[in-house]
Image (tube, rainbow, N blue to C red; front, side):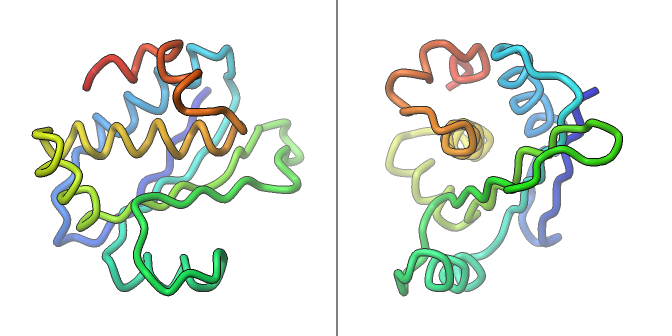
Length: 134
């Protein structure tokens, strides 16, 4: 079973089903089941705080990924980590690249998942069916 935990501030209109679908398609494409991943959609201020704390950069960024050091729980569920996406930065990407918000968030989800698995985006994107939606 694939578990996708999604959190977002209510002022950010996101499609939880689309986020869940993208993550599930990605994980199935690489053959991973019995897994849990957490997705958080945040504002620029929160993203800036996280970027400063973890990367020592005092600026917002588009996406951050945090892999877990102890990934399996007592039930054998693989907890791969957390992905944090900046909604305002996603909006800017959508405008610059002529994408819908859903497409911009999908793009950043794929980027975050690639980071969790240590994959180079350029090599791996072509292999993931969810990436073909944008």
